[in-house]
Length: 260
Image 1 (cartoon, rainbow, N blue to C red):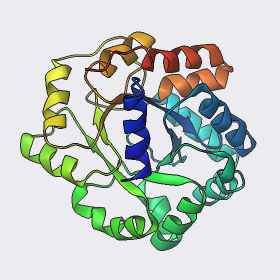
Image 2: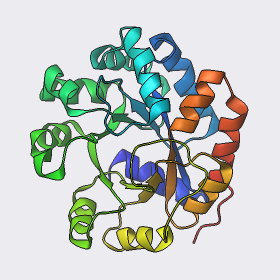
Image 3: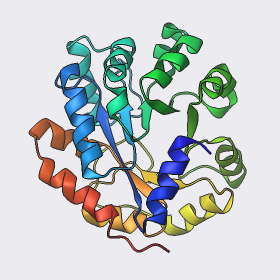
């Protein structure tokens, strides 16, 4: 079993829902990466999604896009992020998931990226601009290194598409809660519970909800019919402000959701 899937299932067995915060590597400088990851680990998160800044982040909303610009302005690159993570990998007990676009991986070299990412503690990769049909570009190298390739399922995916994506996704299914880009939202549209239950019906891989989740109430809402949640823009905003209390309350909310 993959390390990420194992971590999510272990969390569920303990009576909690998985909580995966997203952070932008290099926002505030790469020197902040270690203390941020170790603090989140201390708060009891299940895994951490580590964003790699990119010049054309098509899936990112304004908060994460701005964080990426700040990180790029400080000279952050994929290689520097992996080198930094590797310096304290032995202190990180939870799996890390890299969220990066395809071009940085290709520029790095797919095989070298997979090997270096594993040494840095990366156990999963999300590539939002790479369609499933092109995944064989990177999947063999990631699989050989022991890294999951996580797929995103959108609200507009057809049943046939959902089945293909869920069967291909490793670690967990990243189920998107909104149409559009990332960003904190006050409410969500449509019967999302039925949609998420449909996704889960195709696979025993955990389904996690992401995009727009920004309050403890959202965490509890989506946690009630998924294996857990991913929180991005709100975490990035809180880290920028040094607001650890809000982050802690979001994590605590995931531990207060009754298991179905």
